[in-house]
Length: 111
Image (tube, rainbow, N blue to C red; front, side, top):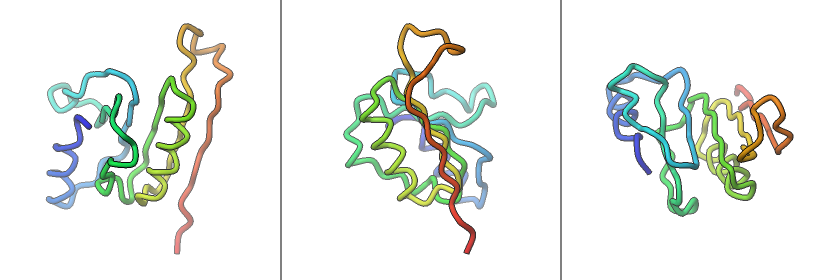
């Protein structure tokens, strides 16, 4: 997992990012340099070994070109305590307007 360390440091200082992008494909994680949305790369990481506690109470977008992995990540991020999770299966080679892959959204109920 790459790109999560600055999020953890911010969380320790009481800051909560508006959104975190979790990408299951090779991607840049130098988001702090450019002031972009926090981006975490989990490409090829064993999902069952990811520690996602830094996502508690955070809105998360998760995408992957692998259907089984994005569905597993969706469940793992929900279980970690994210407040909202939007997940999508990216179909490689298909224009973004023509995507028909699996997608799901989860909203954590307020207690």
